[in-house]
Length: 495
Image 1 (tube, rainbow, N blue to C red):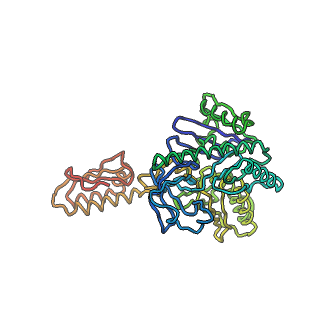
Image 2: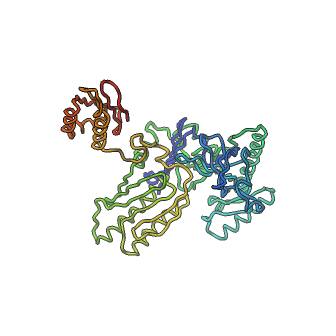
Image 3: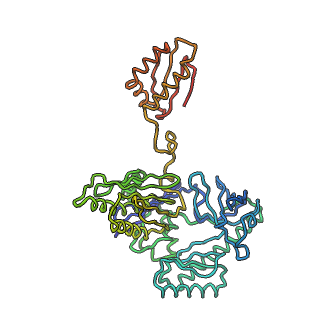
Protein backbone atom coordinates (compact mmCIF):
# COMPACT_ATOMS: atom_id res chain seq x y z
CA UNK A 1 0.00 0.00 0.00
CA UNK A 2 1.47 3.35 -1.08
CA UNK A 3 1.05 6.08 1.51
CA UNK A 4 2.01 9.67 0.79
CA UNK A 5 1.77 12.94 2.70
CA UNK A 6 1.27 16.02 0.53
CA UNK A 7 1.98 19.42 2.08
CA UNK A 8 0.65 22.51 0.33
CA UNK A 9 1.97 25.67 2.03
CA UNK A 10 0.99 29.29 1.41
CA UNK A 11 1.67 32.39 3.56
CA UNK A 12 -1.92 32.37 4.89
CA UNK A 13 -2.68 28.64 5.07
CA UNK A 14 -1.13 25.19 5.21
CA UNK A 15 -2.93 22.06 4.03
CA UNK A 16 -1.75 18.50 4.63
CA UNK A 17 -3.27 15.56 2.77
CA UNK A 18 -2.76 11.86 3.51
CA UNK A 19 -3.19 9.82 0.32
CA UNK A 20 -3.25 6.02 0.16
CA UNK A 21 -3.11 4.37 -3.26
CA UNK A 22 -4.28 7.61 -4.86
CA UNK A 23 -7.31 8.01 -2.55
CA UNK A 24 -7.53 10.95 -0.13
CA UNK A 25 -7.74 9.46 3.36
CA UNK A 26 -7.23 12.51 5.60
CA UNK A 27 -7.04 16.27 5.10
CA UNK A 28 -5.87 18.84 7.67
CA UNK A 29 -6.03 22.61 7.31
CA UNK A 30 -4.37 25.30 9.41
CA UNK A 31 -4.92 29.03 8.93
CA UNK A 32 -1.87 30.94 10.10
CA UNK A 33 -3.83 33.84 11.57
CA UNK A 34 -5.90 31.49 13.73
CA UNK A 35 -4.97 31.42 17.40
CA UNK A 36 -6.07 28.89 19.99
CA UNK A 37 -4.77 25.57 18.65
CA UNK A 38 -4.94 22.38 20.70
CA UNK A 39 -1.73 22.07 22.71
CA UNK A 40 -1.07 25.81 23.08
CA UNK A 41 -0.26 26.94 26.64
CA UNK A 42 -1.49 30.29 27.99
CA UNK A 43 -1.43 32.47 31.02
CA UNK A 44 -5.11 33.26 31.55
CA UNK A 45 -7.29 35.16 33.99
CA UNK A 46 -10.34 33.68 35.69
CA UNK A 47 -13.22 35.99 34.76
CA UNK A 48 -16.24 34.04 35.99
CA UNK A 49 -16.88 31.14 38.35
CA UNK A 50 -19.86 28.88 37.56
CA UNK A 51 -20.60 27.04 40.79
CA UNK A 52 -23.65 25.28 39.30
CA UNK A 53 -21.55 23.79 36.49
CA UNK A 54 -18.39 23.45 38.59
CA UNK A 55 -16.41 25.32 35.95
CA UNK A 56 -14.76 28.67 35.30
CA UNK A 57 -14.47 30.93 32.28
CA UNK A 58 -10.92 32.02 31.56
CA UNK A 59 -9.76 34.96 29.44
CA UNK A 60 -6.74 33.82 27.39
CA UNK A 61 -6.97 36.59 24.80
CA UNK A 62 -9.20 34.86 22.24
CA UNK A 63 -12.47 36.19 20.85
CA UNK A 64 -14.47 33.94 23.20
CA UNK A 65 -13.61 33.16 26.79
CA UNK A 66 -12.27 29.66 27.34
CA UNK A 67 -13.96 26.97 29.46
CA UNK A 68 -12.27 25.06 32.29
CA UNK A 69 -14.27 22.30 34.01
CA UNK A 70 -13.31 20.86 37.38
CA UNK A 71 -12.73 17.46 35.75
CA UNK A 72 -9.86 19.06 33.78
CA UNK A 73 -8.25 20.64 36.84
CA UNK A 74 -5.19 18.82 38.13
CA UNK A 75 -5.66 18.59 41.89
CA UNK A 76 -3.36 17.33 44.59
CA UNK A 77 -4.49 14.54 46.87
CA UNK A 78 -5.25 17.11 49.59
CA UNK A 79 -7.63 19.02 47.29
CA UNK A 80 -9.26 16.12 45.45
CA UNK A 81 -12.66 16.72 47.04
CA UNK A 82 -12.64 20.50 46.72
CA UNK A 83 -15.23 22.41 44.67
CA UNK A 84 -14.36 24.79 41.86
CA UNK A 85 -15.05 27.90 43.99
CA UNK A 86 -12.50 26.63 46.53
CA UNK A 87 -9.80 26.18 43.90
CA UNK A 88 -10.02 29.49 42.02
CA UNK A 89 -11.00 33.09 42.61
CA UNK A 90 -12.10 35.73 40.11
CA UNK A 91 -9.12 37.63 38.75
CA UNK A 92 -6.64 34.80 39.47
CA UNK A 93 -3.98 34.27 36.81
CA UNK A 94 -3.43 30.59 36.00
CA UNK A 95 -1.45 28.42 33.57
CA UNK A 96 -3.70 26.47 31.21
CA UNK A 97 -3.49 24.40 28.02
CA UNK A 98 -6.05 24.03 25.23
CA UNK A 99 -7.34 20.46 24.92
CA UNK A 100 -10.30 21.10 22.59
CA UNK A 101 -10.75 23.71 19.89
CA UNK A 102 -13.74 26.02 19.72
CA UNK A 103 -16.76 24.64 17.87
CA UNK A 104 -19.66 26.86 16.76
CA UNK A 105 -20.41 29.42 19.45
CA UNK A 106 -18.38 27.55 22.06
CA UNK A 107 -14.93 28.69 23.12
CA UNK A 108 -11.94 26.41 23.53
CA UNK A 109 -11.75 23.94 26.42
CA UNK A 110 -8.83 24.06 28.85
CA UNK A 111 -6.92 21.94 31.33
CA UNK A 112 -4.42 22.77 34.05
CA UNK A 113 -2.75 19.37 33.60
CA UNK A 114 -0.11 20.50 31.09
CA UNK A 115 1.06 17.83 28.60
CA UNK A 116 4.09 18.48 26.39
CA UNK A 117 4.22 16.10 23.43
CA UNK A 118 7.41 14.74 21.92
CA UNK A 119 8.12 12.11 19.30
CA UNK A 120 8.37 9.27 21.83
CA UNK A 121 7.08 10.71 25.10
CA UNK A 122 4.41 12.94 26.59
CA UNK A 123 5.81 14.83 29.58
CA UNK A 124 3.31 15.81 32.30
CA UNK A 125 4.97 18.15 34.82
CA UNK A 126 2.12 17.61 37.29
CA UNK A 127 1.91 13.87 36.68
CA UNK A 128 3.48 10.94 38.49
CA UNK A 129 5.35 7.85 37.30
CA UNK A 130 5.57 6.21 33.87
CA UNK A 131 2.52 5.30 31.80
CA UNK A 132 2.50 3.47 28.49
CA UNK A 133 0.33 3.64 25.38
CA UNK A 134 -2.16 0.79 25.22
CA UNK A 135 -1.02 0.20 21.62
CA UNK A 136 2.33 -1.08 22.85
CA UNK A 137 1.41 -4.76 23.10
CA UNK A 138 4.44 -7.00 23.86
CA UNK A 139 4.69 -7.30 27.63
CA UNK A 140 8.46 -7.62 27.52
CA UNK A 141 8.77 -4.35 25.58
CA UNK A 142 6.41 -2.60 28.00
CA UNK A 143 8.54 -3.70 30.94
CA UNK A 144 11.75 -2.55 29.19
CA UNK A 145 10.37 0.89 28.36
CA UNK A 146 9.01 1.41 31.85
CA UNK A 147 12.35 0.44 33.41
CA UNK A 148 14.38 2.69 31.07
CA UNK A 149 12.16 5.73 31.64
CA UNK A 150 11.92 5.21 35.41
CA UNK A 151 15.70 5.08 35.59
CA UNK A 152 16.17 8.19 33.44
CA UNK A 153 13.64 10.21 35.46
CA UNK A 154 15.34 9.23 38.73
CA UNK A 155 18.88 9.91 37.47
CA UNK A 156 18.00 13.33 36.05
CA UNK A 157 15.80 14.37 38.95
CA UNK A 158 12.95 15.16 36.58
CA UNK A 159 9.79 16.29 38.36
CA UNK A 160 6.47 14.93 37.09
CA UNK A 161 5.64 11.90 35.00
CA UNK A 162 5.71 10.68 31.40
CA UNK A 163 3.54 8.67 29.06
CA UNK A 164 5.41 6.51 26.56
CA UNK A 165 4.01 6.81 23.04
CA UNK A 166 3.63 3.98 20.52
CA UNK A 167 6.51 5.37 18.42
CA UNK A 168 8.88 4.56 21.31
CA UNK A 169 8.55 0.81 20.63
CA UNK A 170 12.07 -0.64 20.18
CA UNK A 171 13.61 2.82 20.61
CA UNK A 172 17.00 2.73 22.35
CA UNK A 173 17.85 4.57 25.57
CA UNK A 174 19.63 7.43 23.78
CA UNK A 175 16.55 8.27 21.72
CA UNK A 176 14.29 8.25 24.78
CA UNK A 177 16.82 10.28 26.77
CA UNK A 178 17.00 12.92 24.03
CA UNK A 179 13.22 13.29 23.89
CA UNK A 180 12.96 13.55 27.68
CA UNK A 181 15.68 16.25 27.77
CA UNK A 182 13.95 18.33 25.09
CA UNK A 183 10.59 18.18 26.84
CA UNK A 184 12.01 18.92 30.29
CA UNK A 185 13.95 21.95 29.01
CA UNK A 186 10.80 23.11 27.22
CA UNK A 187 8.89 22.93 30.50
CA UNK A 188 11.56 24.95 32.30
CA UNK A 189 11.41 27.66 29.61
CA UNK A 190 7.62 27.59 29.72
CA UNK A 191 7.60 27.97 33.52
CA UNK A 192 9.98 30.94 33.30
CA UNK A 193 7.69 32.57 30.70
CA UNK A 194 4.67 32.10 32.96
CA UNK A 195 6.49 33.63 35.93
CA UNK A 196 7.58 36.68 33.91
CA UNK A 197 4.08 37.20 32.52
CA UNK A 198 2.63 37.13 36.04
CA UNK A 199 5.31 39.54 37.26
CA UNK A 200 4.30 42.01 34.56
CA UNK A 201 0.66 41.53 35.67
CA UNK A 202 -0.51 40.49 32.21
CA UNK A 203 -4.11 39.29 31.99
CA UNK A 204 -3.36 36.83 29.21
CA UNK A 205 -0.32 35.70 27.29
CA UNK A 206 0.57 32.90 24.86
CA UNK A 207 3.35 31.06 26.69
CA UNK A 208 3.95 28.11 24.36
CA UNK A 209 2.67 27.49 20.85
CA UNK A 210 2.35 24.00 19.45
CA UNK A 211 4.32 23.02 16.36
CA UNK A 212 2.87 24.04 12.99
CA UNK A 213 0.62 21.50 11.27
CA UNK A 214 3.23 19.65 9.11
CA UNK A 215 5.74 19.20 11.94
CA UNK A 216 3.02 18.22 14.39
CA UNK A 217 1.60 15.62 12.04
CA UNK A 218 4.99 14.12 11.16
CA UNK A 219 5.97 14.02 14.83
CA UNK A 220 2.85 11.98 15.62
CA UNK A 221 2.94 9.69 12.57
CA UNK A 222 4.67 6.46 11.74
CA UNK A 223 7.17 7.06 8.94
CA UNK A 224 7.18 3.45 7.75
CA UNK A 225 6.57 3.11 3.99
CA UNK A 226 5.81 6.82 3.75
CA UNK A 227 6.77 9.43 1.16
CA UNK A 228 6.46 13.15 1.91
CA UNK A 229 6.04 15.83 -0.78
CA UNK A 230 6.30 19.56 0.01
CA UNK A 231 5.56 22.31 -2.52
CA UNK A 232 7.17 25.19 -0.59
CA UNK A 233 10.92 25.75 -0.25
CA UNK A 234 10.81 27.30 3.23
CA UNK A 235 8.53 24.61 4.63
CA UNK A 236 10.70 21.94 3.03
CA UNK A 237 13.77 23.22 4.91
CA UNK A 238 11.78 23.50 8.17
CA UNK A 239 10.87 19.83 7.92
CA UNK A 240 14.48 18.98 7.08
CA UNK A 241 15.68 20.71 10.26
CA UNK A 242 12.94 19.02 12.27
CA UNK A 243 13.95 15.56 11.03
CA UNK A 244 17.61 16.24 11.78
CA UNK A 245 16.73 16.99 15.40
CA UNK A 246 14.06 14.38 16.02
CA UNK A 247 14.23 11.49 13.53
CA UNK A 248 17.11 11.73 10.99
CA UNK A 249 15.95 8.56 9.21
CA UNK A 250 12.98 10.51 7.84
CA UNK A 251 15.18 12.68 5.60
CA UNK A 252 15.31 10.02 2.87
CA UNK A 253 11.51 10.08 2.61
CA UNK A 254 11.22 13.86 2.23
CA UNK A 255 10.93 15.32 -1.29
CA UNK A 256 10.66 18.84 -2.68
CA UNK A 257 7.80 19.10 -5.20
CA UNK A 258 8.72 21.69 -7.83
CA UNK A 259 6.66 20.77 -10.90
CA UNK A 260 4.44 23.18 -12.83
CA UNK A 261 1.20 21.35 -12.04
CA UNK A 262 0.00 22.12 -8.47
CA UNK A 263 0.70 19.32 -6.00
CA UNK A 264 -2.93 18.81 -4.95
CA UNK A 265 -4.10 18.80 -8.58
CA UNK A 266 -1.57 16.12 -9.51
CA UNK A 267 -3.08 13.78 -6.91
CA UNK A 268 -6.69 14.90 -7.54
CA UNK A 269 -6.93 16.12 -3.95
CA UNK A 270 -8.83 19.32 -4.74
CA UNK A 271 -11.69 17.38 -6.35
CA UNK A 272 -11.79 14.87 -3.50
CA UNK A 273 -12.03 17.70 -0.96
CA UNK A 274 -15.03 19.10 -2.83
CA UNK A 275 -16.66 15.67 -2.79
CA UNK A 276 -16.09 15.46 0.97
CA UNK A 277 -18.25 18.56 1.46
CA UNK A 278 -21.26 16.92 -0.20
CA UNK A 279 -23.89 14.99 1.72
CA UNK A 280 -24.08 12.05 -0.71
CA UNK A 281 -21.28 9.49 -1.08
CA UNK A 282 -21.66 6.89 -3.82
CA UNK A 283 -20.46 3.35 -3.16
CA UNK A 284 -18.72 1.23 -5.85
CA UNK A 285 -21.50 -1.38 -6.09
CA UNK A 286 -24.30 1.17 -6.55
CA UNK A 287 -25.39 1.94 -2.99
CA UNK A 288 -24.77 5.30 -1.38
CA UNK A 289 -24.43 7.11 1.95
CA UNK A 290 -26.19 10.29 3.05
CA UNK A 291 -24.21 12.21 5.67
CA UNK A 292 -26.08 14.86 7.64
CA UNK A 293 -23.97 16.89 10.04
CA UNK A 294 -25.51 19.14 12.71
CA UNK A 295 -24.12 20.78 15.83
CA UNK A 296 -25.71 18.11 18.03
CA UNK A 297 -24.69 14.98 16.09
CA UNK A 298 -23.89 13.46 12.72
CA UNK A 299 -26.12 10.87 11.07
CA UNK A 300 -24.95 8.54 8.29
CA UNK A 301 -27.68 6.73 6.37
CA UNK A 302 -26.96 3.68 4.19
CA UNK A 303 -29.11 3.23 1.07
CA UNK A 304 -29.30 0.43 -1.52
CA UNK A 305 -29.38 2.77 -4.52
CA UNK A 306 -29.10 0.85 -7.79
CA UNK A 307 -27.49 -2.27 -6.28
CA UNK A 308 -29.79 -5.29 -6.55
CA UNK A 309 -27.29 -8.07 -5.85
CA UNK A 310 -27.09 -11.60 -7.22
CA UNK A 311 -28.37 -13.59 -4.24
CA UNK A 312 -31.18 -13.32 -1.68
CA UNK A 313 -32.46 -9.91 -0.50
CA UNK A 314 -30.85 -10.39 2.93
CA UNK A 315 -27.49 -11.26 1.34
CA UNK A 316 -27.78 -8.15 -0.85
CA UNK A 317 -28.47 -5.96 2.18
CA UNK A 318 -25.54 -7.52 4.03
CA UNK A 319 -23.15 -6.83 1.14
CA UNK A 320 -24.28 -3.19 0.94
CA UNK A 321 -23.86 -2.69 4.69
CA UNK A 322 -20.44 -4.33 4.65
CA UNK A 323 -19.26 -2.15 1.78
CA UNK A 324 -20.70 0.89 3.57
CA UNK A 325 -18.55 0.23 6.65
CA UNK A 326 -15.28 0.91 4.80
CA UNK A 327 -16.71 4.04 3.21
CA UNK A 328 -18.10 5.27 6.54
CA UNK A 329 -14.78 4.89 8.36
CA UNK A 330 -12.96 6.75 5.58
CA UNK A 331 -15.54 9.55 5.55
CA UNK A 332 -15.36 9.94 9.34
CA UNK A 333 -11.59 10.42 9.15
CA UNK A 334 -11.67 12.53 6.01
CA UNK A 335 -14.41 14.87 7.26
CA UNK A 336 -12.91 14.89 10.78
CA UNK A 337 -16.27 14.07 12.32
CA UNK A 338 -16.51 14.03 16.10
CA UNK A 339 -19.06 13.87 18.89
CA UNK A 340 -22.13 11.63 18.60
CA UNK A 341 -22.41 9.74 15.30
CA UNK A 342 -25.46 7.62 14.42
CA UNK A 343 -25.03 5.00 11.69
CA UNK A 344 -28.29 3.91 10.08
CA UNK A 345 -27.58 0.62 8.31
CA UNK A 346 -30.20 -1.17 6.25
CA UNK A 347 -32.08 -3.50 8.58
CA UNK A 348 -30.56 -6.99 8.76
CA UNK A 349 -32.59 -9.92 10.08
CA UNK A 350 -29.77 -12.43 10.55
CA UNK A 351 -27.82 -11.96 13.78
CA UNK A 352 -24.58 -13.22 12.22
CA UNK A 353 -24.86 -10.47 9.58
CA UNK A 354 -25.25 -7.85 12.32
CA UNK A 355 -22.29 -9.27 14.22
CA UNK A 356 -20.11 -9.31 11.09
CA UNK A 357 -20.90 -5.67 10.22
CA UNK A 358 -20.26 -4.53 13.78
CA UNK A 359 -17.02 -6.52 13.99
CA UNK A 360 -15.77 -5.05 10.69
CA UNK A 361 -16.63 -1.56 11.88
CA UNK A 362 -14.71 -2.03 15.13
CA UNK A 363 -11.72 -3.47 13.27
CA UNK A 364 -11.56 -0.57 10.80
CA UNK A 365 -11.94 2.04 13.53
CA UNK A 366 -9.23 0.39 15.65
CA UNK A 367 -6.66 1.88 13.25
CA UNK A 368 -8.05 5.37 13.80
CA UNK A 369 -5.80 7.53 15.99
CA UNK A 370 -8.85 9.30 17.44
CA UNK A 371 -10.54 7.37 20.30
CA UNK A 372 -14.01 6.03 19.45
CA UNK A 373 -16.64 4.27 21.57
CA UNK A 374 -19.10 2.02 19.70
CA UNK A 375 -22.42 0.59 20.86
CA UNK A 376 -24.11 -2.56 19.53
CA UNK A 377 -26.56 -2.75 16.61
CA UNK A 378 -30.08 -1.76 17.70
CA UNK A 379 -33.22 -3.60 16.50
CA UNK A 380 -33.69 -0.80 13.96
CA UNK A 381 -30.21 -1.31 12.52
CA UNK A 382 -28.75 1.78 14.21
CA UNK A 383 -25.27 1.94 15.68
CA UNK A 384 -24.44 4.71 18.12
CA UNK A 385 -20.83 5.78 18.43
CA UNK A 386 -18.95 8.67 19.98
CA UNK A 387 -15.68 9.92 18.51
CA UNK A 388 -13.48 12.32 20.43
CA UNK A 389 -13.83 15.83 19.03
CA UNK A 390 -10.84 18.12 19.54
CA UNK A 391 -11.36 20.55 16.66
CA UNK A 392 -13.80 21.59 13.96
CA UNK A 393 -14.88 19.22 11.22
CA UNK A 394 -13.79 19.77 7.62
CA UNK A 395 -17.13 21.38 6.72
CA UNK A 396 -16.94 23.72 9.71
CA UNK A 397 -13.43 24.76 8.70
CA UNK A 398 -14.20 25.40 5.04
CA UNK A 399 -17.85 26.50 5.07
CA UNK A 400 -20.22 28.83 6.87
CA UNK A 401 -23.98 28.63 7.48
CA UNK A 402 -26.09 29.66 4.51
CA UNK A 403 -27.67 33.10 5.05
CA UNK A 404 -30.82 31.98 3.24
CA UNK A 405 -31.43 28.75 5.15
CA UNK A 406 -29.60 29.71 8.42
CA UNK A 407 -27.70 26.44 8.34
CA UNK A 408 -30.73 24.14 8.12
CA UNK A 409 -29.97 23.07 4.55
CA UNK A 410 -33.57 23.95 3.56
CA UNK A 411 -35.16 27.06 2.06
CA UNK A 412 -38.81 27.91 1.49
CA UNK A 413 -40.18 26.79 -1.87
CA UNK A 414 -41.04 29.23 -4.66
CA UNK A 415 -44.71 28.56 -4.02
CA UNK A 416 -44.43 29.26 -0.28
CA UNK A 417 -42.66 32.59 -0.85
CA UNK A 418 -45.18 33.57 -3.55
CA UNK A 419 -48.08 32.86 -1.16
CA UNK A 420 -46.35 34.94 1.55
CA UNK A 421 -46.13 37.88 -0.86
CA UNK A 422 -49.81 37.61 -1.78
CA UNK A 423 -50.83 37.42 1.90
CA UNK A 424 -48.67 40.43 2.72
CA UNK A 425 -50.32 42.49 -0.01
CA UNK A 426 -53.81 41.56 1.19
CA UNK A 427 -52.95 42.30 4.84
CA UNK A 428 -51.24 45.65 4.29
CA UNK A 429 -52.33 47.25 1.04
CA UNK A 430 -55.79 45.71 1.10
CA UNK A 431 -56.81 48.09 3.90
CA UNK A 432 -55.13 51.16 2.35
CA UNK A 433 -57.32 54.14 1.48
CA UNK A 434 -55.10 55.19 -1.43
CA UNK A 435 -56.64 53.91 -4.67
CA UNK A 436 -55.90 53.38 -7.48
CA UNK A 437 -52.31 52.37 -6.76
CA UNK A 438 -49.27 50.75 -8.32
CA UNK A 439 -47.74 47.84 -6.42
CA UNK A 440 -44.13 46.83 -7.07
CA UNK A 441 -43.01 43.32 -6.08
CA UNK A 442 -39.25 42.82 -5.98
CA UNK A 443 -38.10 39.19 -5.56
CA UNK A 444 -35.67 36.51 -6.73
CA UNK A 445 -36.04 35.35 -10.37
CA UNK A 446 -37.54 31.95 -9.47
CA UNK A 447 -40.20 33.57 -7.27
CA UNK A 448 -41.11 36.18 -9.91
CA UNK A 449 -41.40 33.39 -12.50
CA UNK A 450 -43.72 31.45 -10.19
CA UNK A 451 -45.96 34.51 -9.66
CA UNK A 452 -46.06 35.33 -13.37
CA UNK A 453 -46.82 31.78 -14.53
CA UNK A 454 -48.38 29.64 -11.80
CA UNK A 455 -50.11 32.40 -9.82
CA UNK A 456 -51.07 34.58 -12.80
CA UNK A 457 -54.79 34.31 -12.13
CA UNK A 458 -54.29 35.20 -8.44
CA UNK A 459 -52.24 38.28 -9.38
CA UNK A 460 -54.96 39.39 -11.78
CA UNK A 461 -57.60 38.84 -9.08
CA UNK A 462 -55.62 41.07 -6.70
CA UNK A 463 -55.33 43.80 -9.34
CA UNK A 464 -59.10 43.75 -9.83
CA UNK A 465 -59.93 43.59 -6.10
CA UNK A 466 -57.50 46.35 -5.04
CA UNK A 467 -57.93 48.50 -8.14
CA UNK A 468 -54.17 48.24 -8.51
CA UNK A 469 -51.52 47.60 -11.10
CA UNK A 470 -49.03 44.96 -9.94
CA UNK A 471 -45.54 45.09 -11.40
CA UNK A 472 -43.28 42.04 -10.99
CA UNK A 473 -39.59 42.97 -10.88
CA UNK A 474 -36.63 40.59 -10.80
CA UNK A 475 -33.89 41.19 -8.20
CA UNK A 476 -30.96 39.00 -9.19
CA UNK A 477 -29.12 39.75 -5.94
CA UNK A 478 -32.00 38.52 -3.74
CA UNK A 479 -31.91 35.03 -2.27
CA UNK A 480 -34.96 32.82 -2.65
CA UNK A 481 -36.73 33.87 0.56
CA UNK A 482 -36.07 37.60 0.20
CA UNK A 483 -38.56 40.06 -1.27
CA UNK A 484 -39.73 43.69 -1.04
CA UNK A 485 -43.21 45.19 -1.63
CA UNK A 486 -43.80 48.88 -2.29
CA UNK A 487 -46.53 51.15 -3.61
CA UNK A 488 -46.26 54.76 -4.71
CA UNK A 489 -42.48 54.41 -4.04
CA UNK A 490 -43.11 53.88 -0.30
CA UNK A 491 -41.56 50.64 0.99
CA UNK A 492 -44.13 48.66 2.97
CA UNK A 493 -41.93 45.82 4.11
CA UNK A 494 -38.50 44.37 3.38
CA UNK A 495 -37.62 40.79 4.21
